[in-house]
Image (cartoon, rainbow, N blue to C red; front, side, top):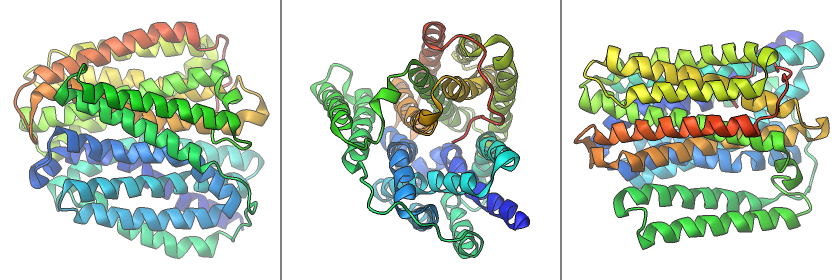
Length: 462
């Protein structure tokens, strides 16, 4: 039984690894996807953001379904959806089909991730559970690193379609093996599920992203942009109203209102937005402007992804010594310096792009650790699960919003699927630098003081 436990962990960790990889693997393939399908800036933005939007927007709902229906049943349903959606995305011949496939992937991931974590936490106990959760948390950094390299290898080799096809045999294998290793688990029955809340927060964020992306075409003052952003604000207001009046809300407003949780949401939102925004800018810069192949771009991104993991490790050690507030503010400052260096968009990738990219990525790494540890160390034990779920949700939503903002700021550099200048990239990097600097000041006021109890293994993950 003991051997089976670790086999189950290995299988579930591989599933989670696949979900994390799918966030970054597409970044390297974007220029090739745009060229083959004739996609412009807006469509390419949705290729990235749709997955993280649906994943984040429905993740807490997926956790509730795992409680109600049983974790194994929910996980298998999510795996079927994710596998079929991956095949659909690879076969896509148009923007509509590809974006629909990415949305379905996000739905599958939103069911898979919390259900898999629930199985891990019920399978392991005491010290074994701590070891298992440490392994689970470390998957994020490794997934980001492998994702960028795998994206380069597959795009340069068999083609961009294989960044999606590769999930299919993995999904089928897990579907065959998992029922033999994980016993069926009874759910809680007909417990109420806050479906309206889940749909409202997802729709509100989709409207926000649409408004941000549309601003790149119509301008910030256009009626179309302002109308959509107003609709997003209204939808968020309705979401808060629903949550306040629902007996079993998707996100408990009392928990969300606690300072440590607000701090964690803020850090996770901005850190992920900065990171994926930088990825979104730099991939076309390297491939369309500097003439790098997809594989060469993946190799450039690899040390950057490793820098995230290294930064997370350094941050984990520092939090216990100087406290989360100092680590958060310092990390934002390092990220701002890195993004400021990138604004020069130098001719040499190795001296003009990579140093700033590495520095910014290293600065982002500790922010993921700080977001989780300062939150979990400062909320009541009874609210730990809800607080963790809310903060993790903002990981995905932050990525969607960050990419949307960078897409709009850099709109001047795109003409259809091709890049026409570097002005937009410089502007995008400048916005990242300013946003990181401002966030550092806010962190000094918002992040709880004191030395947080570091939870082993927390990093850039879910």
